[in-house]
Length: 290
Ligand code: NAP
Image (cartoon, rainbow, N blue to C red):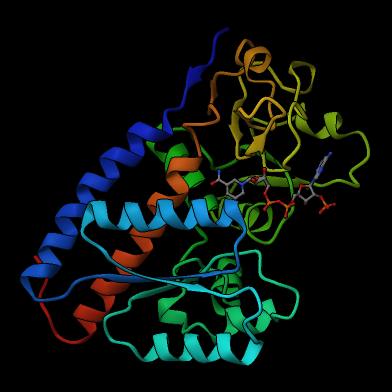
């Protein structure tokens, strides 16, 4: 068997075309969706991610409000910036690029972002909403994975899903989103004993551990769908996921490449959440969108 390659770039491009139309419809009513992106400090990887987000916003007509704040910023000052953005009617989404310097209380920062502008989906309300089904914004990476599965017509209901990685931003919300779609979900992490005994049962295997080559063919069931969320920079400067792509492609029925799989979908879902926020506000204020 040779797996179908799930092309995140082409789905992301198609979705972004649709976004440009939605933004144009909002602009006809003098509403320009706005995303504030706060970058704290000089971490080069964070700067690259923020740059990509700003560029992606511009490409579909979203106005970005990027703020580059010093590494030494105090917790109170950062919270003050967020409060200002909460009150700014031009801003429909607020994103604080993680990780944050040690003097910053991340939980407090995430709770200060207004729920209706929490386009990253990390506010406790949105996290709790994943459990109860009342979330306003789903976190972008797992949301992108769901979109990929849906686009590929991969059934979720009743499937055995195994997620490797239990972080707050990927593994845990991913599990909740797939439970909400009636999958049977197992979550594995660094302390899981004998990872392979879980992964081999997966109809859908989602890997978000940040460990290159963690998943090798012997760990994968014939015909499984394999979603590789991992992004690892190797010694030679190249980017790889967590899955042995060459080997696992021979056993899986479908697989995401790295790069070009989940990555482009993450930023795409950020754009989706920002436009949705602007649409909600416009409708709430009485505009009739086409
Ligand atoms: P994280 O916060 O470091 O969490 C990693 C998770 O993987 C933890 O739950 C950890 O277990 C688990 N883990 C680590 N080593 C393991 C092992 N050997 N076996 C089983 N589980 C293991 O990372 P993250 O933020 O979730 O990101 C995970 C990966 O996805 C990274 O490569 C990151 O760059 C990538 N990522 C990609 C996107 C995208 O858009 N494609 C977005 C976000 C993240 P413990 O909980 O026990 O420590």
